Image (cartoon, rainbow, N blue to C red; front, side):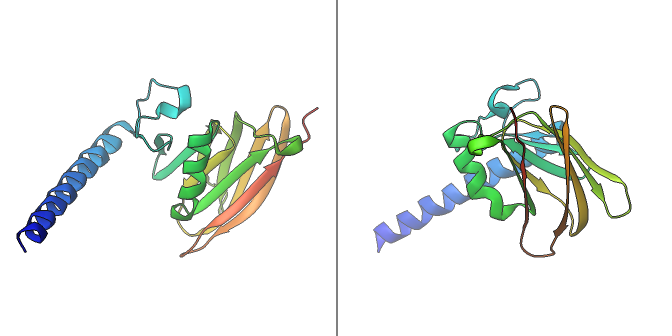
Length: 164
């Protein structure tokens, strides 16, 4: 009995600490437009969260994360896909992963929603439900895909370039 009470207290304390850190991290992210690293760190997207997830960036009311160059980062991003409304993947010949893909997302009314450069083969984007056009440019080659982000669930788009 006493052991169970102690375990409950430890669990409750751990939950409180996690929530407190989460709220503090959220406040930092809102203040700086970045989570999980610093705005001056461009290596591995400022990965400081010990789970391989790159920093979350914010442009306006859109949040996004990109990366996946290393095994830890790519695994973390693939596991996180179900939590993000839109998942983008960028590959070349032989399924080679690509980075430095310029991404522009436009809403159904032609308004720019996001303009960013992917730091790796994966980009996860938090968008409101709706229809969007994703423009992806790698080197001098452009591709466009239309995606519909559902109210529940996720949308995915994969871009492939023949780079030779």
